[in-house]
Length: 224
Length: 204
Ligand SMILES: Nc1ncnc2c1ncn2[C@@H]1O[C@H](COP(=O)(O)OP(=O)(O)OP(=O)(O)O)[C@@H](O)[C@H]1O
Ligand SMILES: [Mg+2]
Image (tube, rainbow over the protein chains, first blue to last red):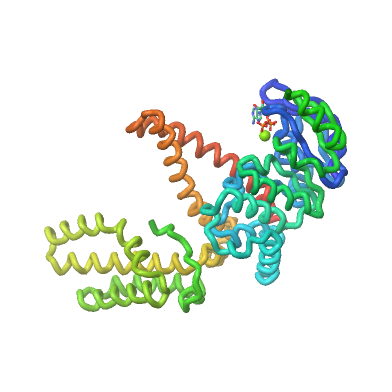
């Protein structure tokens, strides 16, 4: 559960997010909005990668300002470009990297890695060189690399923008099936139909908020 | 490039512990310094080549790939050695170099980077009282090796984009876009690392 209270973000005197108060409790929440409206800025607030200039962001009652590290151990983050997220040379090594802070024994660690690889059907890629995979495979590896740490909340910033339709749908289906809370920013609104709630961001404010059946048609109308 | 990296396999060499392999590599280095006649050196080179291609199952193509970047240096060394010393000296130096590079390639091809960095971490463990975090040193080694191909990719992408616009030989013009992109990637990468808990390694 994430709580934003009167949050504002400024970059060089420009207000990017303007006095946002919202409480995120639903299982699956989508965020849509035009380019430059402030979606990525909003996302980076949620795990303390970015701190608000005004107001507070709390994750399970931890303030991102005071407890950034603890917040990040509970909030996983999936970026648009998996190349920036995948660090280690091979797939299995990259999954193991995220477990470093967990101080597991070698056996526990490789068990967690293999269970996670299996869950995302990546076992056959375990020893493959991660940066030589296809875009769709890379994004799955990045997702597995986040989920191996068992976060309580997953924030995704345009996780399907670089993927073809089939891979985009596959990644979104896996994200939608996760048991943890997920917050997904996307321009592919068709993936949000099963979500519980959709926020529309425009000019740094939440301009619309409600179930996808209502908000998405209204948002699409503003684009027409 | 020796950053050709790990080739999965289950030969005896793959199973050998990384520490033993690194020690063996230094051992070979020491032997190479001590042996100074051509025939034993040649036998050693043939032996390492055999272990590389057959025992570790890495094949002749990889052996050639590891040797190719050396050729120009070997040529230069051969010429200078023949000039300042004699043919025998030239052979010795060349055989030593080949043996060293093949051994290094053999170790990198058969050892997972994580295993290698674990050994480095243990070595750095002795520096812990000085404030060195072994995990981080090992990680930085891995990260550096991972970033080398990424930088080459960036250079290629920028060059491709420029060539498509008719800038065929604008090598200098590539410098600024490559640098800005590498710096921006470094920014994004450090953010991704923080999101993945890099800043929590020592505290929990
Ligand atoms: N580090 C920064 N410094 C200055 N301005 C920034 C910075 N980051 C973002 N901005 C500005 O904040 C605004 C919102 O950016 P943000 O990345 O949040 O938009 P977005 O909704 O994610 O857009 P997109 O759909 O293109 O990803 C943009 O005008 C951008 O230029
Ligand atoms: Mg964005």
